[in-house]
Length: 364
Image 1 (cartoon, helix red, strand yellow):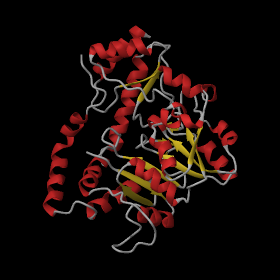
Image 2: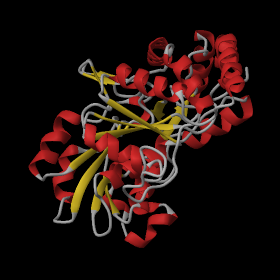
Image 3: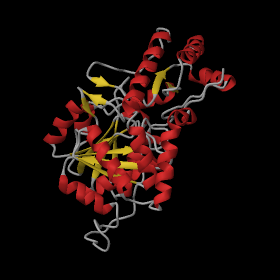
Image 4: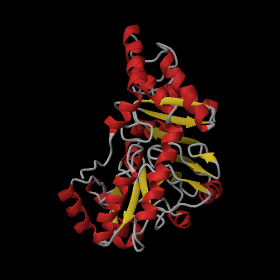
């Protein structure tokens, strides 16, 4: 039985008529940047999260960079970043002229360890990027008091956490600002690149909107030096349709995660989940000491998988200049050797999950 890691065609087939009609509507207007569809999506997404402002942009990495710049973070500053994340979390810090300082993560949760944050803070530290990795919220209740104590800005990287909640509150509404990616494979994915920034601060929202559009709110109104990072009209229209399905898709992801939890044998380390966390399950990540054998079997059987991430950020080539040693990040190092992401998307059947679990259980 061949099972892909994700199935975007299957999702599209279920909403094809709505999407195709909306695409034709946009094409018939001849308006492909800005306009009502972009405003509609921004309003709908901010309402979905329970936030005041949504500033759309071209992608999730731009969202991080625009947010950092708007917060005044730049040359000579340091930003705390979890050691286990996608590279954009760190490179966005470099791209505004600052330095990422890596902090190890929590075993089983894979998010930044609040108990290690204070040891990484110095006079140059300006912000913490809390990544809600794989769809599991970071420990915001513990991170926020530390940030307040040291006067640090908190940026939530929600690129993998559309629909996740902490104590009933949507992630993306805890820090000064949060960022989202709508890359096609995300829980809420566009049909190309797209991103957004969320905040409750009106002045900050205006500044970020200017930065993302050449420093202007209207044409030739260049109050500051900005850049080009805009959400195109087609993607906005598609995202608005898909947003209507996000809650039920995340519910289905949780159901599938429960199937995995039920059919995987004891000894396979499963994702952490508690009553306080509403996991969005962008990824279902297990740990096994026999990863090499497992992925070889998956390759032979045609079962998709991912490794998120094979090398902790402090040890990728881009950051060797920082001179970190492996003993500095023991949890991230261990995870990188054992983690495997199993297929998880709303169209996955229980029979397919049973089949995948059978193969995992056979290897251990």
